[in-house]
Image: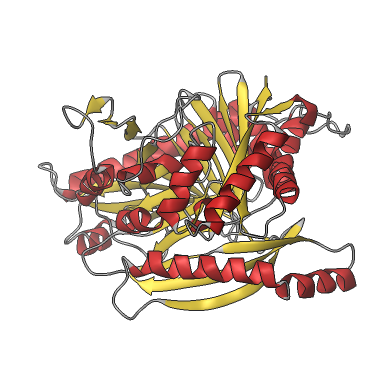
Length: 498
């Protein structure tokens, strides 16, 4: 059945540019992977967003989009929408341009539909922050050649409802068309029928999918080479500590980037990541020049019904082999003074970030140093919330929080300047954010970590460690290697999929 019906849609259209129109289909014999795999190959642009909550339970919706209506790119200051420059030269505030783009595409939030019915989906790289913190220089060389911002605009979204085992097809009817709303609603219904037929045809054509052959994953770690050496990284840690001793910063997050030659298909790596490392934010993006596969545990920022939330994660320890050891390790993490001090510093940074865009007096820490368990590790997690200030939107929130303090250090701008001096390459996607800005004003974004970038015949994996005054350089180096290992191993195992 089509929802909402025409008369309902007319009633809720007042004051909006678009109204979502949707239909539900049975999907009890299908998975999101099967569905997406059937759709992705003939699309130059597409995405899959999924979620696992608390390391054990699937989030209610997986989201799929292909063939976007528009594409927004920012590369070295030149911003284009659908290939056309938005200015004669370099732009200074890309966030305001994106905000203007969305301002004519407002849609109501309907209770019976998923939170994302359409909107902008994609990535803001770490270097997008240079357009906000204008005292920062251009940074290290961009040796991979990535845009700072890459977004796809969708008015058609497919949602997989894990609770009802249904697929929800969604599109939008224009409210301000010369043809009239009834004609636009009829066109929207026709698009849903066409989408349903395309879906059925693609699934029928795709047939079976590939499975792992059960062999031990090939050892591919030796094939991963870093953009720095061990000794060079240790020296960077010592230099960062000298900055900290001099009072320039409290913490500096240093990273290294690994490369893997001739990786397996990016979507196969995503399939392995979602099984081996189920996370609150899992994403696969296919762009014409590159692909991204990630499984991030950490929210950057979300806006839900004008309520902002950011979620600092700082403090990590492995899972125990049995419940008793798990509890022992939890107590060890909670009572580690170094981990607690670093975590509180990042909570304070989160409060400052949220405070810049929140209504006065509304910022609060709603959860403090809760232990959250995942498949292989447990983390210290806090929630910082506030009410969005009137007149602001999700893009204003992104400007305030990007990049996360857990990926830069504190104070943020000075830490970023030091990172620019010490790291060889621009970070690109790493340390930026992936997610969506919905037409209804909601936003959900994560920090782009535990992520692989695929371009040309290479895969890139980057990982960092938070350097403080009493850091042991050798331990910080090992932390970056261990963090990268999970993604590099996923690349290895994906090579064994048939």
